[in-house]
Length: 429
Image (cartoon, rainbow, N blue to C red; front, side, top):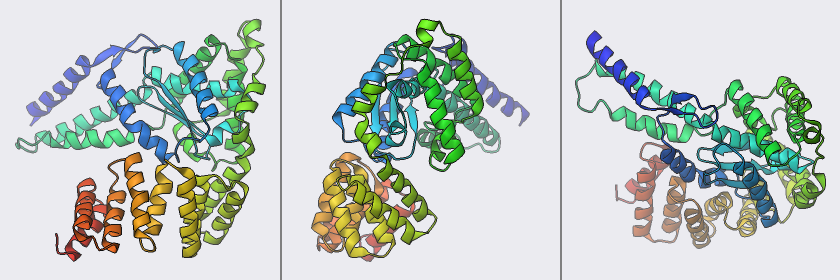
């Protein structure tokens, strides 16, 4: 047993030694069990799902081009300028920003609506680029995969099966969904602050944008911590980080330190997002109340949000969910239908419309579910709902095929179990 454990641990050490490379930022040798090609592929494969999970891109071409332009200027002066960066402003009303491996970066409506200058946005985007250039998500992967190997090693000497490596495959799949938005350490946050400030200064932005950013975030933490709970979970915030930013800016040469904040272009291009903030803040309040099972009050907040922003398809969809939870089925169906029409190519409005229309209008439900499948392929819920719509239309074989697809997409989960139940009921199990 002792000899086998030593062999396993030796294998871990050999793998670690073989995977050491120079960090692009520090130049120091560090463990790297994910090569750059894997990093790029992981970010690419997860970017669209994360955008859709964040309620889709903001429907404002000028704003999207602006975010890409600012992000591109920062990426060009970063430690990894050759990565295929992408920058997207998403409709999530909670203040947040996140980076996936390989340079795939999102910033939310809830955060954009709180800045007063282009430089504040640049500081946040530069900070997220810092996480990418320093490979912080990859570092999380390395820690998890090594921990998995140690656990695997503990099981090797208890079994002589040739399938001992099988759990590593499952671990890899699990990591793919967990590592990318893992909580960063305070040291990683400090490093990304430093890098964000460095990139902003090199790209010509005012360094005072970093101070603006930290003041916004600290104010949220003190006055409305629940509003940015997800951001603070992955990006620990503190007064110390604000004080550090103020100190760093004060140490810069006067011609750099005193660069004016670019408020006018930001207010001009992001003006609609800023103007719409009251409606989207009501969305956050409504969703929070629904989650706390205060349904009537939650629906009322969402109804008010929909009145303030009647052309926002995502808000209309979220209001439909509130109406459904408040047992106003007819109104929920109408609102879901309108939300899907207004939102266009956004997954969640199409999915919600598909679900609520299955009974009253199964053919229309299928149209929405087919659109959802095109936007984000491979989701088990979509296949299950398509099966139910086919059943309602009397199209048995197509229903069977859809249910089998749902089982294949979620063989061990609740959705797969529900699809299996329908297959048994149809005599096709």
